[in-house]
Figure: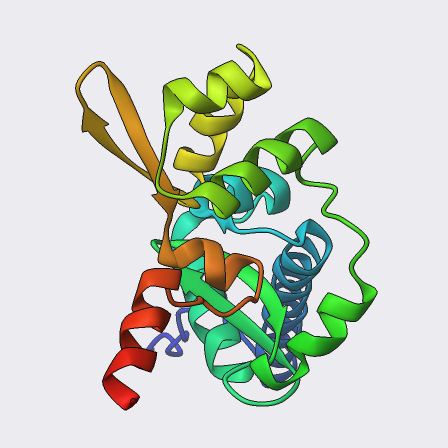
Length: 195
């Protein structure tokens, strides 16, 4: 007599359609939560954050974080809010046409101490100015202020003898949402040419 054929049952787990849907939902929820973490970090910071800072704040792996930042740049490419990418650092900002509101509402930046603001104001007013002159006016703490401004890319320093010549960078004007004014001698030359 012939033995009946037995079907061999596979031990490989089978993913059902409902299981696949559940996995998709979990993945989408994780992705949405990660995106919201990045948006919240950028919104609350109010300053440029580099990739390392964003990784530490959000605990998101670098590959996924870069993808999220890319999607957010597209999402905020037009509208009131913008995501600005400068030298692989990101900042949430408002569209340029609303900068006048920021300037009206701003009472000072919490990112800079009053002493730092005063040092930066002198550089802005007197530029180009020698670092040694700033130190005479503001004291030795100004070395730390100038170092911070240079790290943020707000001030450009050029070696002049034993000191540095300091002036504002283009990033300064972007950062504080102000327009660059022409130096006074340029204005005078322009008037002479018109006459």
